[in-house]
Amino acid sequence: MFYHPFKKTVKSKAGKTTKRWYYWWKDPITGIQHQKLIPNVSNQSEAYVYVSKLPDPTNTQRRITVNEIAAKMFLPDSEHVQRLNQLGKKLSSRTLDNYRGFIKEITKQFGDCFIEDLTIPMVNGYLMNLTDKSGSWKNSFLEALNHIYKEAPWHCKYPVIKPDYPRFARNSKKADIFTSDELVRFFDGTNWVDGLREYLLFLVMASCGLRLGEARGLRVKQFIVESHALVIDGFCERNGNRTNYNKKGSDEDQKLRVTLVPDDTMNLVQKYIDSHYLTENEFIFQRDDGRPLRQEYLESVFHRVIERAGIEIANRKLCPHSFRFTYVTRMRRNLDAETVQKMVGHSSVEMTEYYTRAAIPEMVEGLNPARQAVNMLFKEA
Image 1 (tube, rainbow, N blue to C red):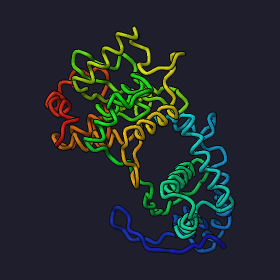
Image 2: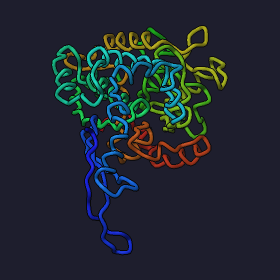
Image 3: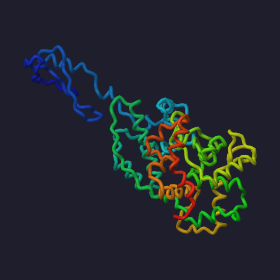
Image 4: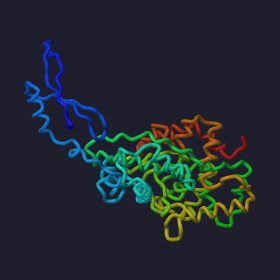
């Protein structure tokens, strides 16, 4: 018998003591014990008759496997993705594909397991044995698994408690920064047989702390020439599609930011725009067909210039993102952390979540104290 009648003494609101019949049972899924009042009974026989008519809890709370929950997760037209969209979490096709890949990895290993049976030793133990996978890959696996737990309430009639899976140390090396001498050599015109277009794109990255995708996606109208400022409102994905929001943003929450442009860089950009007769909606650094430069092409240009400039790369990770690390490091010499975070768009500053185009003039004005530091960016400390 699943249900067990018992009598206990209770006190009414008026303070009167009386005996009432209850029943208790243990949830077959969670193991949690529950109790409820048996209404309108006066003796043990009636109590047993009542509980004998209650439904079997193992039938009303069927256990759910990981496969059943994850089967259609992150598929473009699935109910799961539609729910994410309504909650303001619109994911790009590339992100959906990435998550779907990890969902397949999870279901291949744990698909037949009941979701509530997964444990830290099972999951983290499995990941620890994958010696060919990086810490970042394993954390992405755990992040996808976390989404399965979030999806579980839409499939289960019982609560599922997620274990606090430990995260893995990231063993991928962060990008190194450039020295002052290396910046001079990198932007020495004699090393640039690839042309002014590529030279200027990397100069803007170094001068404004941009990500490569943000630089590829730059359009004329993003520059506020009179203020020597730049509005970063999107980036190019690897396939060339430009978003209307910044990293970790969405159509509803763009995470727009503004940064200042050094005078010398702004003058070069303005001359380039004028000489190429670019209109405000055009990409500044474009191919002959008007589309943005390819990421793979720019990465190859970067490494060719590094080699021509004789910049030492042994035991170092120098890549286009090194300009962003270098920018943050140098700006921190003269500015407080919060100002730098506003300019580079780190999401740890809460106010960056609420920037809108209407506030751009105020945003520029708020950065004016940083103008001197921006123009000293390439000066020796």
